[in-house]
Every structure is written in C-alpha cells, then in structure tokens.
Amino acid sequence: MPTKIQKLITDFLEHLEIEKGCSQLTIRNYHFYLNRFLEQSGISSPEQITSEVVHQYRLWLSRLKNPRGGTLSRATQNYHLIALRVFLKYLLKQDIETLSPEKIELAKTSDRQVSFLEGEDLENLLDAPLTIKQNNIIKFRDKAILELLFSTGLRVSELCSLKKEDINLDKSEFSVLGKGRKYRLVFLSNQAKHWLKKYLEMRNDMDPFLFIRHDRAAKKTTKKKKKTRYTSASTGLTPRSVQRLVKKYAKVAGVTKKITVHSIRHSFATDLLSSGARMRAVQELLGHKNITTTQIYTHVTDQHLKKIYQAFHDKKRKK
Image (cartoon, rainbow, N blue to C red; front, side):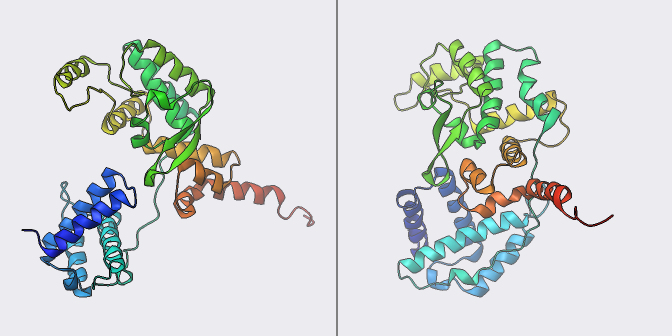
C-alpha cells in the first residue's frame, strides 16, 4: 500500500499533466527525481521533510557516482533539487505542512558553454547529406532536417513531433507546440522550403509524420505494428535517431568539436544576434520563457558591443 507521500507525489504528477500541461518527458523526470529522494531519505509523510533531511540528501547526491564512474554535475544535482522545490510548493498550496521550498538553495554552477557553428563549418554540416552515397530519399530527408533546424531553431522533440499537415510550403511560417504546451511562430528559409518540398515529393506513404524512417528495418516494423490493434504503424524519427544523424554529418563535414541538435539551435540564435537581432526577439523565436535563458548568448552581444565601442568611442580626442 502506498505511503501518504507516495500518494501526494502521484497527485502532484497528475497536477503537472492536467493543470500545468507539462510534457510526458517532464513528468517522467520529476517522477524519477522525487522517487530518488524518497528512496534515499526513507520518509513516508511530508511533515518529515526537514532541512536536515534535505541536507543529507544533498550530501548523498554530491557523492553519487554516475554510470561512467564520476560524480553528478552541479546542474544535474540542481535538477533533483528543483523537482523537490516544485513539489514542496505544490504541497503548501494544498495547505499541507512541510518544509518551505525557499529553504532549499540551488548549488552554484559555472557559466554554461554554448557550442555553435558558423561560417564554413556550418555550411559544410548543412551540405553533408549531399556529399555521401546513399538513397536520394534519405539524402533529401536529412538535408531537409538540417535546413529546417537551422531555419527555425527547433528543439529535437519539436522537430520529431511535426506532422505533414503542420507545414504549408506556400507560406514561410508555421506554429510549433513547444515547452509548457505553448505555441510559437517559426519561419522557413528558402533553403528549408526547397529541400522539404523535394523530400515530400518523393514520399508515397500515408504516414502523418513529417520525417520518417526509410530503411528496411522501418518497413518490417511497420508491418508488425499494423497487425497490432492498439499500436500506431508510424515510423516517425525519434529524437535519438536525429541526434545520431547530426553526429554522423558533423563527422562527414570534418567538424572536430562536439555537435548535437541543440548546437544547431545555438547556431540559429547566434546567427540572428550577430546580424543585429534583439535579444527579446530571439527569446520569442526560441520559445524561452525567461530572458535569462536567452542570455547564454552573451558571447555574441559582447562581440557586438566591442565593435560598437571600437567604431564610436574616443573619436573626438586629439591623438
């Protein structure tokens, strides 16, 4: 039989899904972090959550080994603490006695490093699918994926959830459902529209997803799924598949730094800011809730300020 706090965690997760509209991934992560807290602390009711219990939990997290034998990063430890704080905030709103979430301070982390591409490296990555021998439909699909990512700054989950009906190639814009189940407007470059059209013209399937698998394994999987009453026969690409795809083409392009799908999102934002776009506009295009999240791109604005300074400062003084 579940304990009192286990029942409250279930209620909290349902609250995240129904009232807050959080994604299943977010809910799954919160479930994992809170269960880890229960397992380590051994508590059974919210009244037992004290500053000392949280302190011991933080010590345990800081000494916990990851699968590679190292310790958890400060950022990962903070994810655990954030989940606990949000849960405590929910309990207090339900008038349930427990520890105040304000008493849990997050660990200080180092400044986030942004991996992005520009210039020749970026062009080589975007063109990489066309430079290797493979089926044209895969070649055009992968080229369309890379161009769409750079054109819109989509997250990998947002890209994989796109349906064909979401995109109107007669227009240069469409809405995407992002974090917090909020829609935002994104725009298609001419290159993205061109390669999407070429890819879709080669499709003769009824699959609703915009990007799907085209290998033999996908066909076998589809046949098996069609036999199952409650299973979708879709062969839409998964986020992991797209991550592998980007890693593959980064290697083909000769890019030595570690590149992920998020690196292309960073490249999108960097390109806009370096061309003069305002930080607030980029925040909207990326779907960031807070401007502080967008401010990781200060490496761009700092360089922009430096150019303004060099161009205009101290010009009237005698040399």
